[in-house]
Structure formats: C-alpha cells, structure tokens
Image (tube, rainbow, N blue to C red; front, side, top):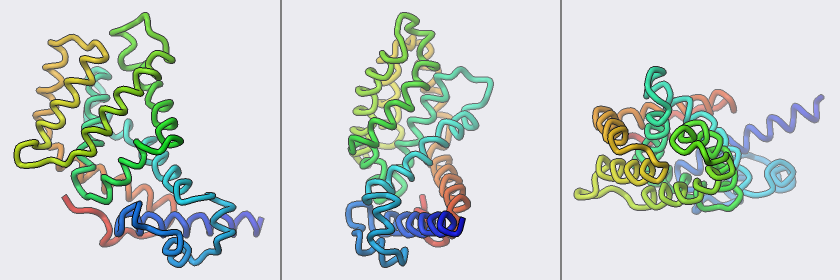
Length: 233
C-alpha cells in the first residue's frame, strides 16, 4: 500500500508540474528537464508512470474531453436538440484556443498526435452517432467514426488560424458550424436556427468560465493550486 501511495503522489506531482509548465511556457517549449526539476522526481519514476511528455498530455486531454460535452449540455440546455450540444461543444473548443496561445498549442497537439487523435475520434464518434444518426439513419457508428476524420481536420484548421480584426471569433464559429452541420446533413432551416442560437451567446465569456471550471476540476483531482496561471480572456 505504501508503494501504491508513493506512486499516486508522484503521479500528482508530475501532473501538477506539467500543467503549470504547459500553461506558462507552452507544450513544445517545456522540456523533460524542467518537468523533472519542477516535479522533483527521477527520470525512471517518470518513465514508469507516463513514458514520455506525450503521455502526460494524453492524461490531460482525456480529462478535458470527458468533461466538455457535459459542460456544453449545460450551456445549450436540456430542452434543446442534441445538435445544439454538438455546435456548442465544438465552438467552445474554438473559443478556448483564443484565450491563450499556450492553450491553443495544447489543443493543436491533441488534434495532431496520432495517439491523441485516435482517442478523440473514437470518443467523439459515439457522440456523433447519437446526435446525427437521426439525419442519416443508414449510417453506422463506424461510418461516423470515419466522418470524424474530416470534422476533426476541420476543427484543427480553424483552431490553428488565430482570429484577426477581419476574421473574428463570430465569423470563425459561423464558418466551422456551417461546414460541419452541412457535412452531417442537418437541414438548412435547422442549421440557421443553431447559428442564431450561437449568435445569442457570449461565447468569449462562456469559454473563460468553462476554462476556469475545467482547470478547477483538474486542480481538485490532482490537489494543487493554479493561482495566477489561468489564462485571462
């Protein structure tokens, strides 16, 4: 039991250190030397738990993606059709990447690394089948898994291009949702209603609140403070 307790405490210290360093320095600029020093762990202890820096990112990405659809359901409201949840969850991801460049980098890594992409696509396919199956009842969950290759690429493309004075967050969200919902055969009339719903939301403010809540939950799980580290919108 003592060995298991030590392992759990070591895992927590590593995750604490990585969250802080990823938010402060960015994922790519954070080195293993910095992680080991910050976490006060040996290289062998780190290897036993995570194997690599990418292994830590997988843990963090799982946590974030497991919670995002639930948060989106709360924003969209229980009375609205599931397509509103999908639209809200996806534009929330896009809005989150506009809060801070280091946070953008974390999301882009998640949509780039093969192992992380496979996790996201398989997890998302289940949601897609539930949400868009009624529009295309002839498709299976495997079909939606394959369609997610395209929508994930679409998501990454919009995340990778920061907003400008001309390419505002509102335009970015509108373009992404329009392409995605048309790809999933949502009727045009319903698509326009979804866009009108999104236009009525303060997505920047919601993204800031969601980000703070996600990291509060993360800090509670791994027992650490993020005071002064959360990106400000």
